[in-house]
Length: 530
Image (cartoon, rainbow, N blue to C red; front, side, top):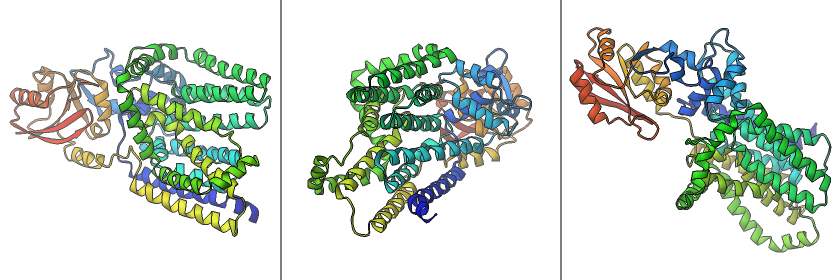
């Protein structure tokens, strides 16, 4: 018991602290990114992937939508639990494979008719904790140090990148777990090829591709690195078996989800066609690479600072390192795992549909493994030192305090504290008419869904002179105020100009003034007043 405490105590303490920090931020999460709302809709809406699909004619314009209409979209309704066929269909119409959405539907099915952030956050929390366990195992296998492995868990689990991934109710947290399990399988193959590992390689690749297509990039370069490694060790049979297992994983994706071919070769913003277009746009390379460099640097600030210290340590220890290399005390096999992540970062930075951090969430732990590699070099080069146990535990404690401070100083994304204000404003006007001006773009209504739930109903129009709009406002009697959402984004949606739209609304109604309540992404929200 005492020996296990010495080995695993720091790791379990780190897990407890990371779990507490996660729950602290989860409790403070006040809103959702539009893609997070899509997670609920695509997982739980019965054969209706988008809000327009909930209408018989596919149009939201000139219709009154109720609170229940919105809840039917994001909830599992009574009698529709564990609706895997619906999830599959919805994802065929979307741009992603269905595995994460199946899991989400399972969790949602245990709480039908409930729309809550905790549905997604609890699922993500479980997956996040499993990712930390696998990361610990990976670093332990590579570098044979419990302290090094615990440090890796701390640096990733408390990082902006790691917490943002886990707090975003999207498939990226599962993608990260499957990336780590794939790494673990590769390490096991490098240690000693065993027959049972090849079916697991196949299943892991298949599961990763069924989660998010971006899994393929790091997986491809890692497979290539291992294949070269196996050939260099003259393990020709193992190399062939591995290659066959990997190719079967890709083939299984096509067999299980044929819509992947349509999605990957479509000419949409999120598609293979868009990736090729970005790849051939050489002029954007520099800007995109700089954006992703800063994104990763910002997401792993504590790890970056520690890396700088480690490089100084490497310079001071260069004689010891040279001696260790001559004595063959150092292994560089971990580069098979590490180098593909940096290649993937460059490629994803160039081809991603939008230059945002989430497209490299799954390789975030690999950058931490690179830091662990530097720690390993210093550990092995210095060998045993006086009071080694206490020195290492002291350094580990300082690392934990350092990472905790950065977690406070650089909080995770997808928290949306401003939504508290938006919700408070909407609650004050919930008994007034609400109008949504959009040209049938479901995206804008999806983004605003959390605030729209404060109203019993709202009217969708694309014309200020709509007769139905007049009738809707009249149905509220002599209300002095009316809330108006205007779809203002010209890239993703209608791109209306409020300065043109609002005077037209005033001319066609009994209202005579307006004021801006708030701006939020795709929309601006105004209050019409008499």
